[in-house]
Length: 157
Image (tube, rainbow, N blue to C red; front, side, top):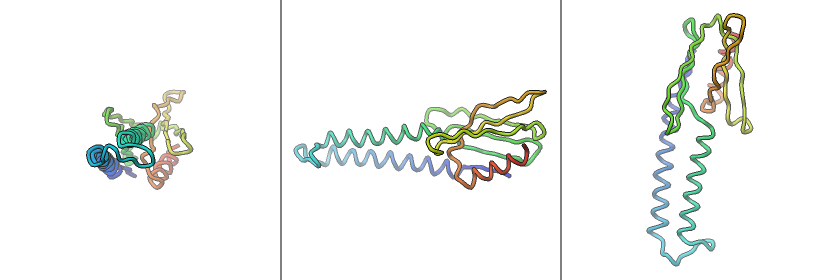
């Protein structure tokens, strides 16, 4: 089975572009197109510009808290392959985990923010011990992809 979320990455990037364009347009309309003496709900155009900027900033912070990753998962050969990289603007480090199926020891799920933020820790048998890979955010997977990933990993426990 292969899980590749290229379409989700494209949608996320497109959504970011649309939000930035809308933010700039609304900000320009508020700052340039509105008379200085005109108020809405008792606030002038500069206060509205600050509120719009704060909302944009909060949307960026929320997305960075989710730590969305591009994820590629495959279990076709003798290895379980899990490739990922952050969709964050600042971090473009690419990571890959390859575990032979015969030494795969399972996984652990970590859920936070009422299940919105999910991470997985893959486990591997090394001699007589269990090694843990660093947690990988899988928040970008939809419900169907998440179920496919878990069902696939459960086969090799």
